[in-house]
Structure formats: C-alpha cells, structure tokens
Length: 453
Ligand code: LLP
Image (cartoon, rainbow, N blue to C red; front, side, top):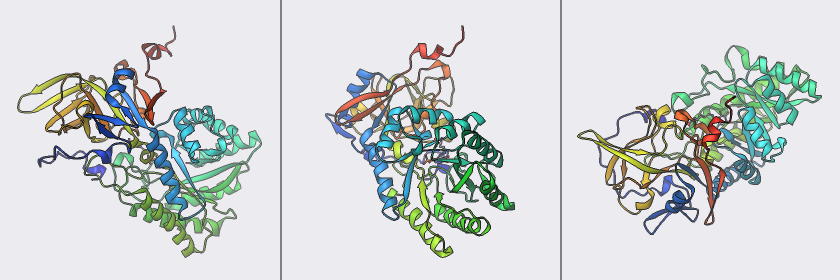
C-alpha cells in the first residue's frame, strides 16, 4: 500500500484479531507475561518509571539498519557512503550512534549541524543540504569544513563560493538535480519532479548552467551531483529511472566541463512498513538496484564509477521506535465509533493529521490478547483532526492501559510541537535490558525558556 491510498476509507473486511505485529515492531520486541518488551525492557514498567507520553527506540535495531545499508551497498561497490538523514530523528546520542556505525550525517539546517558537531562528529563526516540555506548557515557549514554542501540554486553557489573564499578554502559542493521523476508516494513528499522547489531542473539547460558556474567559481570545488526523488517509496523502479537520467547528465557534464563528477548521491526515500499490509522493498534490493544501476549506466556511457552516496532517514529509525501513552478518557458515540484518548497526540505525531498516515497499535499490558475491538485513538489537543489512529483494531482497552503505537521512530519526535503548550516527550534508548533517556522530557520551565521578561 502506497501513501496515496492512505486517505481512503478503511475496507470493511474483518481484521485478523490475532495478526502478528512483529513486522512493524522493533527487532527485539517480544511478549513476556502478556506484556510488550523491547530491548529486554518491559514497556509497562518503563512507562511507569519514565512516564508517558514517551518515545522508545531500540538501539540495536538502529545499529542493525545502518549496518544493513552499509553491507548491501558496499557489497556491490567499495566506494559507497551511507549518509543518515538527521531530519528523521536526531539528538546528540543518535549522531554518536550513526558515527560509531561508520555512517555520515546529513544535516538540513544549521540546527542539525550544530547538534552533529556538538555530539563530536567530525565535520568531515557531515554533509549539508536544504533549498534555502541562510547566509549564516552556509558560513557555519563552510567554516566547520563539512564534507559536502549540496547547492540548490545559483544564488547559493555564489554564496558558498564567497564564504569559502573568505575562509580561505575551496568548498566541495554537489549540485541538487531534479531528474523529473515522480515516485509512487504522497504528493507532499515527492521531490524529484520538475515542478519542485528543490534543485536544478534538467530542462532549459538550468542544471548545465549550474555545473558550468560551479566549475568557474573560485570558492567551489565541484564534486558531483545529488538527487532525492521523495520519501516512503516502495517501487524501486523510480530509482532506476532517475539513475538513468542522472548518469546521462553526468556524461554531459563530463563532456562540457573540465570537472570530473566524483560523487553521485541518490538521496534517501526507501519506504518502511507502517501497516501490516505495507510491502516495502528490502535494503538488500535497494542496494542492488541503486549500486548496480549506477555501475551499469556508467559502463554504458563509458564513465568511471563515482563515489556513491545514499541518504536513508526513515528506514533507519522508523521501525526502531514506538510511542507509549497512557489511556485516559474513553467516549462511545453510539453507532459511530469509540474514541480512546491518550496523553499525547498531534504534538508528538503530526503524521496522521498531515498525511493521513496510519499506524498499528497495541495495549502493552495486554500484548498477548487478541485485538478484537475497533477504536479511534484521539489526542488531547484542541483539534478534531488530532487523531493518532482512526478505526484501528486493539485489545479490550481501558483507562489506565499503556498504549504502544508502532513504527513512530521517524518524523515524529523531529516534527513534534508545543501546541497547547504541551511538553514534548523524552526519548529513551533501550538495549540489552537497560534503558536511558537520550532526550529528557520537557518541563514547564522549558516552555518559558525563551520568554523575555
Ligand atoms: N535526503 C534528502 C535530501 C531529503 O530531503 C530527505 C527527506 C532524505 C534524504 C531522507 O528521506 P527518507 O529516507 O527519510 O525518506 N516528513 C515526511 C518526510 C519528509 C522527508 C523529507 N526529506 C514524513 O513524515 O513522511
């Protein structure tokens, strides 16, 4: 099931109450004594000790995913870098884990860069992108000496060059190209089509003009090309098509400029399993399609195979995470539906309201019981659209139960807000029977920290 079907009415067919949720839960998830355990930690006990709402992430799974990306890409070509897209979820400890696993970090803002550097990640293992980096963000990236800046416009090229000249360096730069491919995903997260705020289009010679300019500018070391066609993509053919276009353009650049294209970055976007019906591709298939695709196209055009970069975000963290909530009020609207309200909502997970995204849920303290009821999980905020899951199967749920929402490791904490002055939940990493906060829960004082006077 792709994203564009997420807003459709739920099919009437009965859901199997005994369906196994392990494919949307972290790898270390298990049921012990009727309760959900992750990373050897009892989620019910954790909710009691650490409080709810709470993001829980399985550190082993995060490490496993990063290793899988490295393994299945370098299997096909030695020179591949996995560059984790920090926007999916970041904090200092996450950056340390990514660096420790031999991966680089992709930052989409000065804030993400500041966190990566504060975590102790060397700037040489960091890349920066974004469609409108401010002059200050450009300066920060250049002065830190990041590995690559991905330039999105001619104005940015000029600004990067000036900042680099001022710093007395030549900044390695990739050009973001929109290859004109529309992947099969939600319109809000398609980014590779021609009508896009991102990057240089191939039509009308815009991308070639940028490549020539990048070769001329004194502060720019033109290192290669970048694309990112979208997110939550299931059909890998979209990558194959985009790679054909990109390598063709690479060949043109080699012909028309003196600058060798040393890097080809294919972005992120590999989809994950949110619902039991979702069938994303495997990391193994992604590695093969991308790396073999680039090798094949380079051979066809008689080009040397460049360093290849991939930028997964969601696929590294989404299924490593669950959000724990405590069930509060319940409201039965006769003949319509039952609302089950929790101590969080759109402030910690905006994705159902924003994209119609669907999540699987279970009661952590009744994890061995069948999901025989269908309810709607509502947040505590002042919006009718503040729903976390509409008409989902769940165990016989009661006030005080601990609800676990699956696959919330990506784009939930990172898109969280303080609407209604809700404090944002903390993030706990679990591993080998131990848990620790890597981001603490906010306090009321945090809410007033920026107030002046
Ligand atoms: N590289 C670039 C240049 C990107 O813009 C993105 C995501 C990624 C890599 C990582 O993509 P991933 O592997 O995570 O799909 N808020 C939306 C997702 C927006 C993605 C934006 N760019 C959501 O919650 O679905």
